[in-house]
Image 1 (cartoon, rainbow, N blue to C red):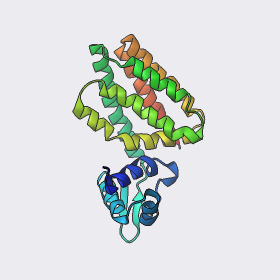
Image 2: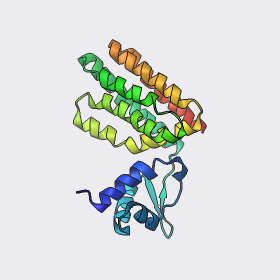
Image 3: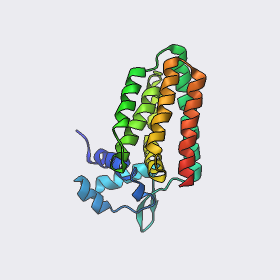
Image 4: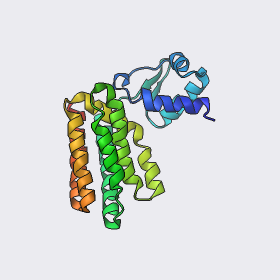
Length: 208
C-alpha cells in the first residue's frame, strides 16, 4: 500500500514540479494536503526529500519554493542526457537490439497528443521514448540513473513546448530521425539525430 509520503512525493514530482506556472512559486502545505488527501506531515516529508534532490528550496519562515531551473542546470541536463543517450544508441546498434517497434508505437502515440492541453502527456510520452532506448541497453544502474533525471526532463520539455510555437511538430520530426537511424543500424546518424534534438531543445529553453 502506498504511504502518505510516497503519495505526496509522487504528486509533487509528477504534477506540481512539471507545471510551468509553478516555477519559482511557494507551496502551501495545507493546500497540498487538502488536494492530495493526506495530513501535512507527509507533505513536509516529501518536500524534504525533494529538497535533498535540489528540486525545491526550503526558505526559512517562508516555506518550500519550486526551484526554477537555471541556464546552467539546463545545459548540464542536456549534456548528461547526450552522454547517456549516445552511449545507448551505440550499444543498441552494435548489439542489434534497438526496440524499434516499441519506439515506433510511442512516436505514433505522440502524434495524437497535440495542443497545449495535452502538453504534459506529450512530454511524458517523450520521456518514455528516450527511457525505452536507454533501458534496452540492459544496464540497470544506467537505467536508474537516467530515470533520476525524469522530473527535470519532463519539466524542461513542457516549458519548451510553451516557449515555442510548433515545437511539438519539431519534436516528432527529431524523434523520427533518431528512430530511423536506429532502425537502419547507423550509429553515427543516431548520434547526430540525438545531438540535434537536444541542442534544439536547449536553444528553445534558453531563448525563453
